[in-house]
Image (tube, rainbow, N blue to C red; front, side, top):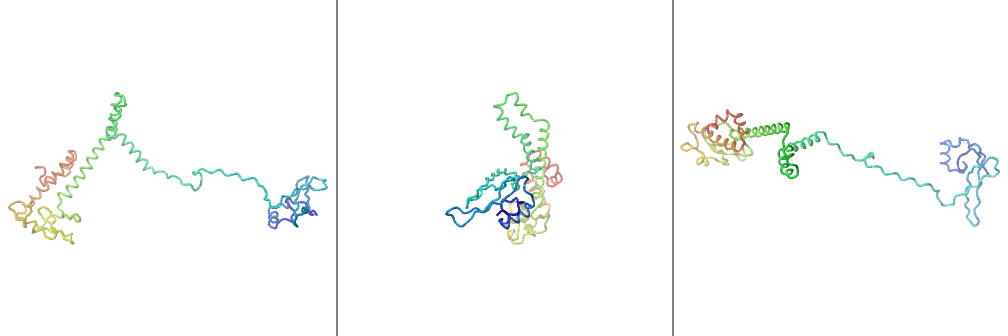
Length: 299
């Protein structure tokens, strides 16, 4: 028999709906909404089973009937065991990799790196070595009238090149000056791991380093030769000792000092010969007093 109430919008009578569905309709407010105007709902009775079928019955369904219709429109029930057909969901388009929220992004290089790269490219453009390479490669392709204009350095680049050369001379002069002061003018322990400096000594020329303990460093005062645990045998026959001088106790002391002045001046001259003239002039101006003490200018 039809239901007493025809205000439902559900596709089935409320008494035949599952409990969860009925609760969902109540929460969503479907039961409180009136039926559409000009339509009334009728509950179709249960359909009898087909001849020769089992004891199961098909449930009736709601259908809308026009006003004044004595019988509701019959809706063909769905076959048992078949699922409702739904249109397939459209496949979402794949997003680009950089539009996804967790996609890795390339880090932006720091400004210092970009500035260094630009300076490197600019230095290549004004380098004389690059111009020398271009002179050999472009001479066969460029017109002869344009080659002098392309290879001629501009005024700013020539000024920067001169400043760079002057700065290079200054760096080389500073390095040579430190080498002369630290390694030639200053007497040190000959052992590489120690290099303890000393100014003067008293007594025997067979010297002992105060820093080297295990093993101790005994060295010659005439040539700074590392003799291990005893230097007396080497001091007695040292080839650098001046002739006619006591090997162990040099007297007068001026003989020993003059010996080291000559050795220092010779080593300074050897270091100066390997330097360029501009560097040599800078070192002579900076160490004028020290070089005069050892007699370097008199050579």
